[in-house]
Image (tube, rainbow, N blue to C red; front, side):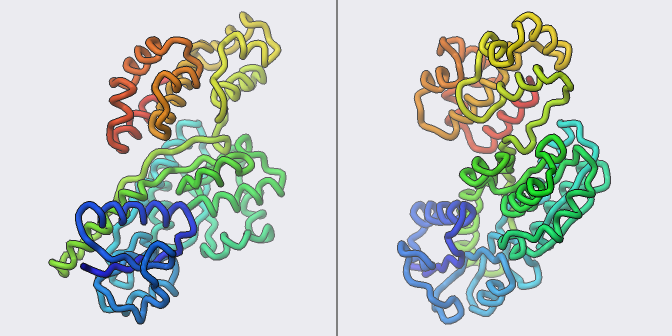
Length: 384
């Protein structure tokens, strides 16, 4: 029975997702004895003095890198912060993550871009993917991750944010960095998203939802990374010379208020769009929207079509499809309950519209792979 150490702190969604993938592999394909800094595993007081067969580590800082570099057993790193220690990397595709952020900012019609990073390899790769997509210069602010984790000083970050042109798209290396940006922007009177749009990475859902404003973030396939890391380590036990690294494609962008901007000067139309694409509750009907914006329905419909090029009803259906797709993936609720939750009175009508737009039934969508589901949601988002 191989003894495998998990060198990570189990303190956030990243560690939890990785460990779920490792455990799933260990249960399905191997009989491993797992060690880690958590009550459910064997004790791992000091990796340097531990005697086992392999290590899966989140090498987020040089202290951790130095702790595991000299153990003398195969090490698979799931962070990808450094490339000089000889670890095998099984990580997120960070370049692709950056391109997702850049592509989204482009759909918002933004022409100015900024990046806030940590200076690590994974952060630089995300920056490079972002800059390759924007087609415009990207200004950069970099501080070590530890600086961001200890609530950054306004004295350093504020001048950078204040100097940015209005309607800048700022991509942050992860959610911790993005939250520091949001806090500092709020203190400086910079209005997000109207003055500054912000995207993070990791989709720490509770943190992102309760940020002010709620934070748009790119979801990572952490469990897949953990599973692939365990699979790679298992292969190293029989073939220690297989040194190639692996990247796992990121998930999709989960859009929240920090990037929810609508290109219109009509306050009633903007309010209507905000109500349609709000994060919670059933998407209102056209009549309810007119009542909540205090504008006559006919007048609102004319103004909405003039500003957006589509009817309010089309926008409502679009928002309902997106919300339904998210609920199908994130919950086990009955399809009829999801249809009602997003505003459909008829489950049959929901089935028809979903199949028409997603090219599959809601049940087929729920059962498909994460990668196909993410691509389908992206297609639903673009085909309004």
